[in-house]
Length: 114
Length: 114
View 1 (cartoon, each protein chain N blue to C red):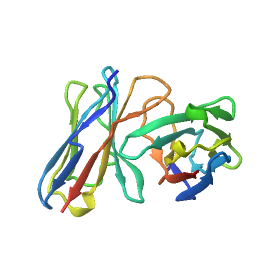
View 2: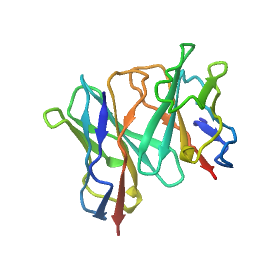
View 3: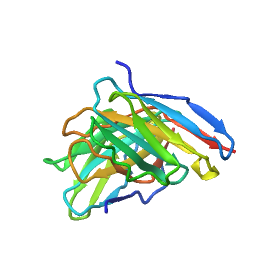
């Protein structure tokens, strides 16, 4: 079946502009995660959605970052007033509701802020 | 707080030789441990996990990992490396079973040389 998809695959933007990154999780998966992969920094958790519960925003690095998940499916990560340090690969993952916590990752969006 | 350390940025091994990629963790309770692999220009793929039970866990592509509670380690191993195993490997931990964000190490790049 279809895996997690993300769009765009690459995004180049000027400093100060807003960007939106999209994630389509695997159908039926209740949990959705956003992570950021920066060079030499590994993967950093940003935000987590579980069903209709309030999202866990504890990983968002600043109030310029926000995310929403509509209808329990598609999610959009928005970065306002982008800065050069926001340049990274943004990864989305989803998982079904079970005890195994096996997260299925999308290919990522590479964001470059110039 | 949970944390994961991957002490080697790079591991080089000759094809056919055994490989080990090291991981140590720090959690305040019982850990749930994971290994993921990232091939170039692709998302992370789940390799294996330790939840409970046998300390030796077998996963995809012939990989296995050994949970060592006294040394707080979860090293990834394979008896005979293939060139196609060359990739970036991430160790991750969570404090809970079920859907929860993962805390990742910084990754170890494995190069298998023919």
